[in-house]
Image (cartoon, rainbow, N blue to C red; front, top):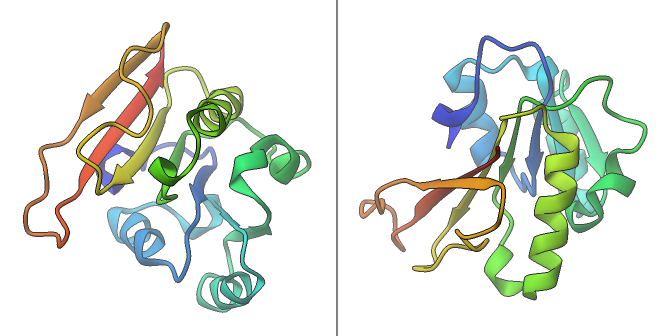
Length: 154
């Protein structure tokens, strides 16, 4: 997932649902400066853990599914990427579409919305007008096998 994030940018990288920080660690190992990270987490216990583990990151206790409300006073620039580990396929399609709409309002033009899933179908439809979609090969070494989907607004 981290490979889709531009490490040369200075703009924020938003992570939705970081939990204990597995993807956060991958982003940092990839070269993303911790100061660029905006971690949106619903659970207050995970927020406390994230603040301890990533003291230079911005940790927002909020609901990723109401992204605009959660980030309204946080960002000083449009994000260079949004990386999501949210279980999107468990949500109704209208909720997923609202999330992607709000995500693109937060992202810089052409910046990626990166979503990982265990599902065999894309979590967001591939046929949305004005959106380009790419998928990684299925990652068979992961149990269960996973796939990364990348969405960009054209």
